[in-house]
Image (cartoon, rainbow, N blue to C red; front, top):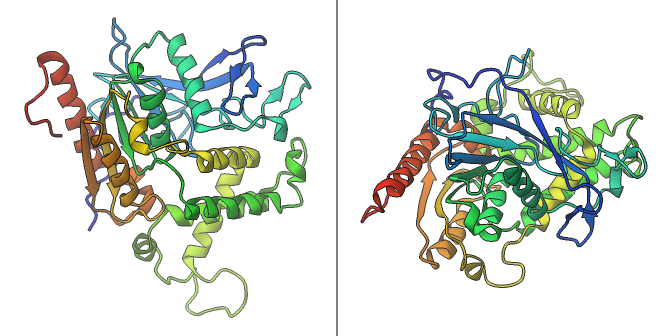
Length: 394
């Protein structure tokens, strides 16, 4: 049984918002990537909601998923649909913009305003394509830290994200412990498993097998639409659960009373995947999909030791949320993370939400998440003012 409701329809939106851009790491001061290579200049697209208080202590960073962007809430001029986490960000919502200054930035390697494969390489005046160095989650966070420094934010009250966003929040907590008071990790883990890597590799092969991919040099030419569409179909299946797909589509036919006995689309679920894939091809770059999915696969917080040891210098409070039907990032992976955090005597609230929506639940289960996030943030605010509770709970 689902515990969600409509996405905070009774609460106001942050209204009209516009993307902003920050450029840093000019030549001779390039960003040193995890690979040892350098990249610069780099640009990050970002949006902000709410007001930064005088001592800049009320900032919350929202980190996005593989194919999302900085547009987390509100409406761009002329848009009919709001940002991807509209139900969670705004006046009176979980990330209450009456209280907090909410920052959302587009990751390095993306195609939604930040430097990525489609960006112009200043040394060639042509798109980077595959000449862009490999980007890791650590590199994405290092770029975010540059943005935070630019905005004068020395310490975030919280950093939150679902899926890949949770990985970014983890890196903040481990690499910049003094710069984060709390982390909200939703539907995430600490490293990709063989199955998760395999699913991404199938998507990458779909793109690279498209004759229009041309080894990543397709800019200004025909894009590898078929390969990218297939990658999106595969990915979208992993975001849902068996039950949610059955509830939404079952074996419903498309405008017909019987099977066609040919290879046209018979079932609504087939048509749905084609629709989602078609929309995705129009808004996302194939090379960015390759780079970011590889960054996810490379991520392993315990790659050079025990996971527990990684949190020895961590200072943040944690809220970890998982979902019962998430088979892409199953709850047991969150539990492993929670055990490592608690082994370091960190303040951790661990919550598993009963949901049938699969991995996408963090985009759908707004009511349940909102209650948890609000209670968590309110508790931390009270503790900052009055000291810790003898029995902290959300």
